[in-house]
Length: 51
Image (cartoon, rainbow, N blue to C red):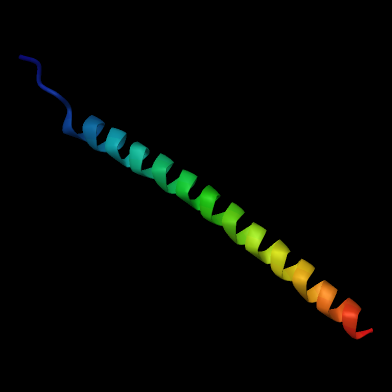
């Protein structure tokens, strides 16, 4: 039986959580960016129709 270093396991877990968080953040930012660009397009067309 080998003695496992607990800090190593912890580091691995933290790394995994970090990776998950980063990918979630990326997905969220792309969604937000898409929403924002759609909003910009919509507001631009509204401004264009009022001119």
